[in-house]
Image (cartoon, rainbow, N blue to C red; front, top):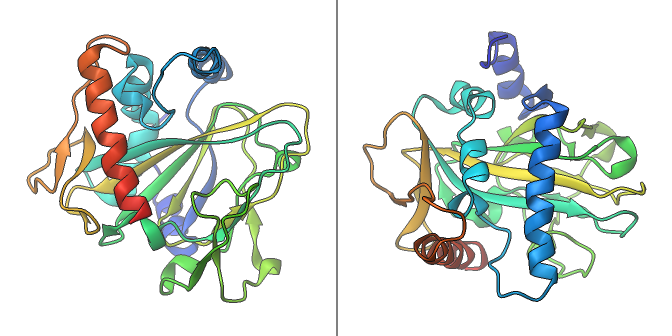
Amino acid sequence: MSTHLCQIEVESFRERGYLGARRVLSEAEAMRCRRALEAFEAIRRDGARTPPLTDLHLLFRWAWDLVHDARIVHPVTDLLGPNVLLWGLNWFIKEARDGKFVTWHQDATYWGLEPHDVVTAWVALSDAGPATGPMKFIPGSHKGPILRHANTWEDDNLLTRGQMVEDAIDESSAMPAPLAAGEMSLHHVRTVHGSTPNMTDDRRIGLVLRYCATHVRQVKISRDTATLVAGEDTYGHFDLMQAPECDMGEREMARHRDSVVRTSRAIMG
């Protein structure tokens, strides 16, 4: 089975600004990744001085291999071209019935990446079915401008600032994108999207991989970090990160800390 998108899928993404469920990991692979994540979370809960969950590919080889996996990266190159960077890895986790949600927003509003040749791969490591509050997209919204956003700072909003589109959204046009564990969706950095709370008894775990073409720049801080996952980088707009030689080694922890600090400055700036 090809790891690349077909032409119909590429054209659909261009038209709608997202692609729904695509199998990229087996259920067993997704479970192994979930267990690796939850093992790290358990260390953090025990009170150890451990780093945040952001950019775990800089700390753990399993995560490094995952963000380079052809089943994820090849579809991204079909949309962005052969030379691609991973700008960041993050998580959108809704615990069982915890009331967490995501307001309607566009990622391009606050990431500082220009031009907008940026695609997010959202990989489900647990079920993200209809009752879990899967992502919903507004088809074609990526073709328009950046909309006005307000920072709500709501406690149950999973977004950093509780960002929310101020303009009216036609929610009747929203398309849900439920995923089974091991499936991913793709969306454009300007596509309006959001999600409702998880009403199930299991956590909904979304691995969020933010990819960009190598010609993209970070315009909010002088130098940001990224990881080359396909092709070559002839632009040098980002400081490229190295693979971890050992899990959570001293050099790995230092590189991870530097990357997280710089990205946080860009997002919050």
